[in-house]
Every structure is written in C-alpha cells, then in structure tokens.
Image 1 (cartoon, helix red, strand yellow):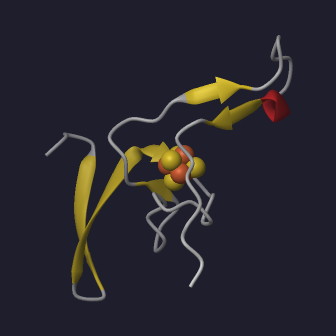
Image 2: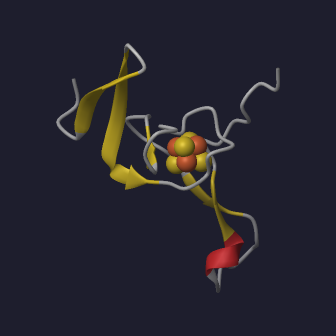
Length: 69
Ligand code: SF4
C-alpha cells in the first residue's frame, strides 16, 4: 500500500483513499465518495490553454466520468 493511502471501511467495503490528493469532483469514478479525496496513487494535472494564467486553465487529466445507471 502506498504510504499516503488510508484504508477505510464504508458500507462493508474497504475503500482506499489518498489523503495527499484532495478532490471535490464527486462525478469522477475515482472520487472517494464519502470524503473529498481521490482514490488513485497518482493523477496527472493538465492545462487546456497554451499558457495557463488562472486556475480555470487547469484540470485533472485523470478524470473519468462515473457510469450512469
Ligand atoms: S482522478 Fe482527478 S477528478 Fe477524479 S477523483 Fe481523482 S483527482 Fe478527482
């Protein structure tokens, strides 16, 4: 297990959360859901402008949408 990961017991499931990566994007399939953290070991932060000059120019490049049921 990575050092930054915490194992938590939620709804009878073990869930790993990475407390080094805070995230509020609950629509992402990697979001910890019960807490505002990511569950991945590593994410890629990207810019979507040629030159980033504000927070709005950056994104999580590891985002993947949750499957809609
Ligand atoms: S992959 Fe990115 S958007 Fe998804 S939970 Fe992790 S940090 Fe948030």
